[in-house]
Length: 154
Image (cartoon, rainbow, N blue to C red):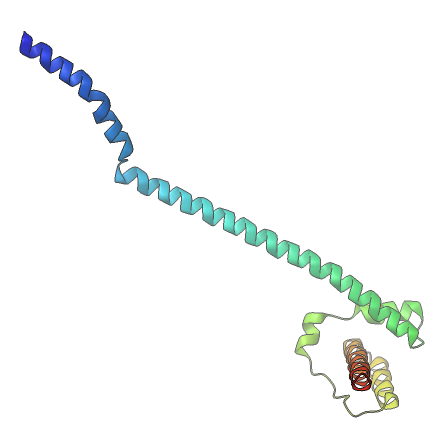
């Protein structure tokens, strides 16, 4: 009986240590499943973040497009176009399309020549070209004024 009693006592003392060891070393199958679950969760989160980022970029671009078209309409009105006509022409501007079309060369041309090019585009209902000519013309004027300002400050 002493042998049995001693065995039971040793077993009772060793049981918590054996259970603790089993808990600290999870089975490889469970850790692989956990790893896969974490990867799937991360991939889902990344997909949601990318979708949100794309949606936010689209919303921002739409707001910028509205601002851009508003400024184009104002510029057309400053050049003598009616408010309705200016809005109509400005609404035809598409920045994606503008990046793909041929830009007419205006460098070295006089203001009158550029104005004639814009009028021709408007008469032919090439509003996209007219808008792009106006934008390029405004950029050229801005560059010239910056160059002139930097030359006089030297």
